[in-house]
Image (tube, rainbow, N blue to C red):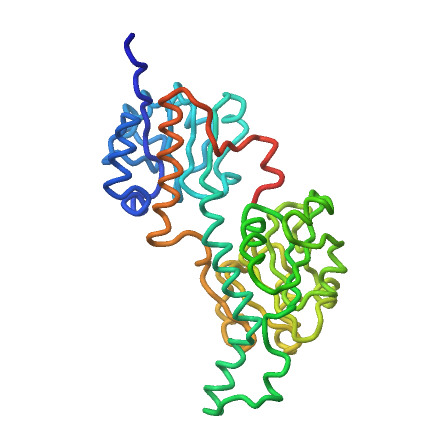
Length: 337
């Protein structure tokens, strides 16, 4: 009995990412499961140069730099049956037209959650050691801190509040279990038994903010979570508390946060901001109690290969007639980052 033909796939992303997402060994695996030309990378679905490839494609492999998948992609690729995203969130990518057409969508968001959780764990442990303030003090004084100055430093029993049991949040909770920390959790979709299974004590947001030494954000950016940490809620965090945001900048009212940071009451570790990047005159660039990074927590460099591997595995499943392991459903979008 003849085997089914391999799916026809087309890349739709910024080609600069292609060699990192699919290095030679992964590209070879991909080409064993799909008919795909690595020299054809679509950036514009209306480009006549891409018409022939799109017309025969039943699978799109997308990534950063892919244009939104509106009605024009279905016009250009009438046979399209699957979109496999070699990146994280697909909220800005998919459209009603795509769902209505019955196109299956998969994302490597679970793989992208790994470096974000690892980065956040590192920041939590460094914050517990007061590493950033100690660095600034050491630069100024050239002297070791006294026992009095380090009396409140350490990661034994430190209370860490996690806002959001997202994929990143859950992976972080797993990583935190090997440390002597007290972990608190706020997530309206999680019950106390599930939270206990994740190694955390579930509680209302306001209580978590009052009790935590370090607060880490891992909720999606939705209308319900926009500026969820406003002036009133930021004021609940104890003096000297640390806010970590590796999720979305819009979860925090940055005007209110800036006021707290300028006053020196809080510390912040910010890999995301609103807007992003901050404007040139923002105090976030110069304050000693702010550790600001340019959205580096997610997959970078050799970590991109992990995303490509997820897509290659999904293509192999399509070729074998098996269901996708990392599907994204329309109903999921209201709770995704």
